[in-house]
Amino acid sequence: MSTKYDLKNDTVGKLFFHYFFMSTAGLMVLSVHIILDGIFIGNGIGSNGLAAINIAGVVFPFLNAVAFTIGFGAAAAISIEFGEKRKEKANAIFNQAFILSIIISLVYTIFSVLFIDRIVYMLGSNEALFQGVKDYLLVFSLFSFFYVSVIIFESAVRNDGEPVKSMISLIIGAVTNAVLDYVFIFIFHWGLKGAAFATGIAQIISFTYLIFHFVSHKGQLFFHIQKLNIVDIKRILKNGFPNFISQISITLIIIAGNWIVIHMIGEIGVAAFSILLYVNEFMILGFAGIAEALQPLVSYNYGSKEYGRVKTIVRLSINISLAIGLVMLFFSVVKPEIIIKLFNEEENLINLASHAMRLFFTGILFTGVNMILAAYFQAIEKPKISNIIQLLRGFVFVALALLILPNAIGENGLWISVPISEFLTFLVTIFLVTKNKLS
Image (tube, rainbow, N blue to C red):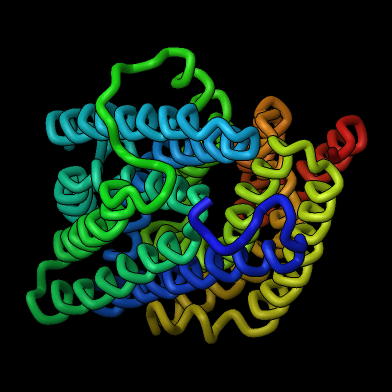
């Protein structure tokens, strides 16, 4: 592959920390941008802006569901094909993934523009938040192709032996987005339209940077015209389906959470929920960095039948996720007020969100392990097991918790639904690993 690192023969520690550093560095910059995005909206638009962006933000896990399904599904197949020395097949799979991104994002954009009012109300908006949600969704829908393609390109570039380029694309996009957020919100006073334009323009810039990798022919993946191949598409979608479950579940949980909160607490509750989701996205990016490092290394060595190396990579990934989780647990429980005040300084919001944060993040250790093991099974093209993990943690257990706990114990039941879901999923995951021993 086009890198000085030999995925089959270099030491596991050297490979893993190289890929982990590149993935995590880019994701950490992205996570800082996510936090800044919330800070700019909270301080430049107010608590109603945070509430509106939380409702409009459902678009991201939905588009992520599409992009990660295609991108991660193709990436696992590409890296296994590289491990088996079938480069032409790997390139064909990449091109099928790109064709899919064009078709699906085009359908999404047309649907969003035609049915925008219905979508806004369906997502749980009330009259006070309607216009802000509509402004954001309508503008961002015009950039959906670039958003989806960037995620697919990042996965492909990483599996083409260039994790540095993937990292740089994240940094470019995050920095551009943060700068434009400030300009459009504080200087031009464009409100949530400005936030949407900032995100969309940043995606175009990342897209432009990444596309040069494929047109320059410096790697093994490049564009070439081909027809849709149903066999390859089925393989991509089958491999990526755990990501679809995970992201669609996030969408449904946000919608359900917003509905429960706005009826139980009101707009300030939705604002607090929005802050929790911003912080949560920041925290789980550490685990995502581990999963992104694990995937190409596990897939390549699995394709090369180096099963001992696969086991070592997985064990190292779990140990690092536990260490990161402990740090996250400490900061989210001991002094959450420091984090909350970055978004807004309304006393009622600070008190509510701080209390919610202490409960919401008690299951963060289980989150990391569940994500790593789901990524492992996906990387070796055993998506059924990964599907079970993602379905339980993202939908089944958390949906049951949301149905039962808020009614039983009030608003605290809402905040503890996610950690309880992660713990129950962890128990099932350990059982599945025991039944399907690591390679």
